[in-house]
Image (cartoon, rainbow over all chains, first blue to last red; front, top):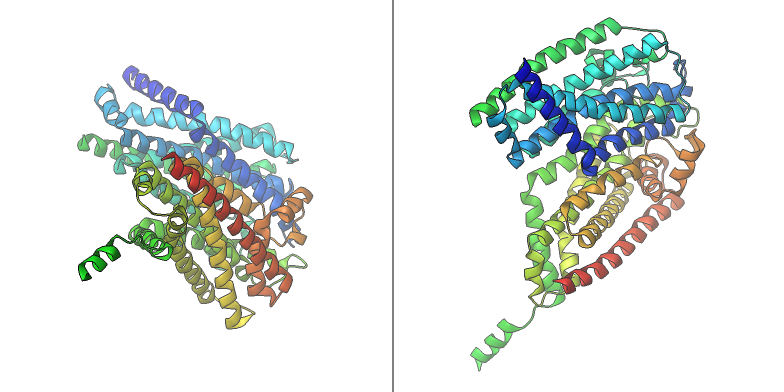
Length: 256
Length: 270
């Protein structure tokens, strides 16, 4: 266990250090969620006037939850990019040779993803509050929303790490990013689920990201819905993807 | 005598048109060989079109929304997003030529800077044409009706290709000024922001937040989108078309002029 923690701590420290000292890595992960918040909450706020659109905290809050969870997911995805970059540069192979407990590498990257998102999530929240977001949820509700974000970040980090370890090239970036992007945008991003029509409604109804998004919006509005289901789905996703990431690591070990 | 003539012809420096053609041929071949460069810029705007065209269909219930089909309203966006990808692809290719020293070798030949710049835009022009046709066909296949008819569709293609060409010149300018692919790709988020801070998702008069509406009004991208959109949902709107073509031409002229100057500097440096 001590060797596991030793490796995890080292990889996490390097991950967050690289993020903080490299603007090219840090800025996109901060700017993109802010930009989405501005574009959606600012440009589309008229959508709140559509008949049957009911969300007590207002459209900024409605979009904040999406952007908050999206930033959590992309914090994990960007960590996948970092893993791929480490394989391209040859660092990951040296790490595999020197780590006394290799599963600590995955844990280290996951902790790095969480630390990176802590910064992004804080900035997005401050921006939303400055933009006039109403928060109806209690302290417990907000802790619940934070919990959803942390678990979503873990799920995406395990996905990104696993796939990057299987593919071991920076060119995997689009493959890591695209499914997460599509999954998120196939949820009710702009209007609540009942207002969606056609194929997007059918897809969104079956999309697990919809449950997480609805739970998050419910918590911000202090009218929790599907919270237990959202946590269960994310926990199951994390468990499955932990196995996936471990297999990715095994694949990288075999490749040498 | 014949041998002398042949020798004279073979050493004659090629004219500007021949030079442009030679560089353009290389640019087009390179573009068509890079499948990833063709497929991703085509697919990504279409994925967003499919998702947003359905997700935002409730927006048509907003009083004063100009059409009952959000898909028709949103069809203008893939053309602009595709143009952004063309800009990045152009800049990245040109930057690679600079980084690998290909430019330095060309500088030793009698090739003119103008021919090099215009020729390098050959591949992006082909890419822009393919994209514009595909987006239009996908729009029609998903039930969008172009209210200006066949003539409007051709004008739409012309405007879309002109916009993409203008953005390609912008990509070339960035590559020539900065000289690295990383710097070119770094401007992509900025370009993307200009699209979202425009009337891309809602008509300007329906944007509720005042500062956002102001930004969208001063953002030239709004007029590029509205030019294309007018042909799809409004009809023959002379003002929208004049602004669309006008801003596209302005962007093209400015970026080409600046890129030409940057090319001269770049060739002197080598």
